[in-house]
Length: 203
Image (cartoon, rainbow, N blue to C red; front, side, top):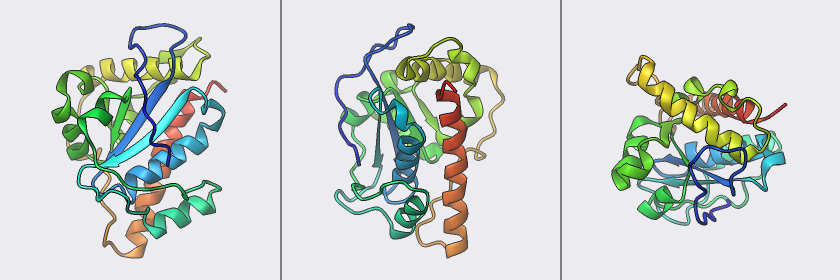
């Protein structure tokens, strides 16, 4: 998994930014966050020079491989899970990301607690961001990193005006769940990722 986060780009509006970094967070960094990370990278492969993806877990045991079920799911879709390795969420990781996507509300809140000023406008749950993101917020912007930055600003502004539905935006932890429930979780994440990637793509 690509876990290299360097200096963060400016958050000021513009048509070009140095780069954009997305961090996906769950609990163990075994199922939900590494799956979303790999799928986002695959869906936005053409933007790989401008957008970097990483993942972490609030209670991760560093160095643990991705769950086999999630890895198989990725392989079936032509994505490469071979470099997946869990790591613990830290303040440094939060502050190196331009967008933080939690699998559930607890993960979003964990990121905000680590760095409230930085993360407040940049942290969403996966489902929340997919629900709030609008491609028109980046209308006319071609650069992928600048598009993503514009989408985050738009989603953050819309969140204050949109009616929230507590609990609706959580993706349940599939760890220990029956195979059918695990598969449903992975398919749910795939759908959410595609909605986000579709807004970032320029066509």
